[in-house]
Length: 316
Image 1 (cartoon, rainbow, N blue to C red):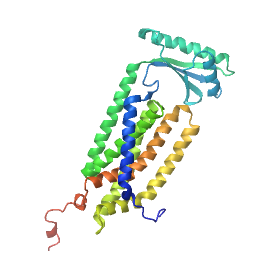
Image 2: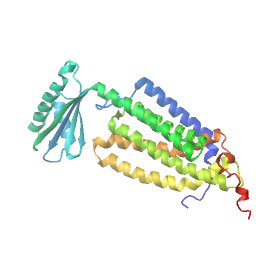
Image 3: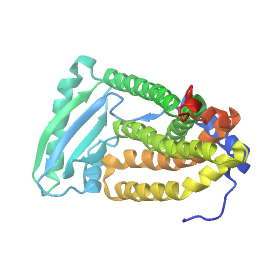
């Protein structure tokens, strides 16, 4: 085993609970006061997609746009290092009905500006207006999707394990999502569609880790003849610790690679998942297990049901 020493995780469960409660409360307050820094995917604006004949130097594109009055433009790569997307906030002076036509003009203008300062041949792939209504529908659909996912997870774990385990898993998932959103709100990190996809991935990752721990807890409750529920949970956490650490580290290696070499278009996705993996690993150890102990899980809750008349089966 990678870790032979038994760590008393549940010995600090009250401290961990206090830290988590503080982080969740701070996140909720920040979300209520500051909300999220929504990207163009969720707000009104213009999206201009361009293709270069050579690799794009993002810093040069940003400088050209700033020199020509587009200080608020956001440039990200997508698809390959020869394709970029320029995101511009909506021009409030233009009527809503004229925004789509204006987006075409803006796209042609930006293409001409960038072509004049670049040695590459630039092709305009498209210039579209993104309305705030679409963004609101995306937020609503994403929120409903996460709530439905949490509900289905609760039913699934209730059937596979026991109701107390399902409460622990859902509380841990909610804890992970709220803190991740809170960090985005506090540090004003842009929240876009990639980030929303990352949140759904966090649910899957954290749930998988929680199920592994829960499965070992159930197994030890049935197998171990002595020990309190707290001691059996501690043993289970230590037995799965090597797997938890190795899985988290290998996942983080991939995510940091995406963060540093994946381009700006994937940065939000990578940041959200890095936060989610760290918080999810923590919650699998301290939150889900903590909740089932507070709900007074017992050996009887997890024992296999005795088949009626089973004692007569072996009588000749």
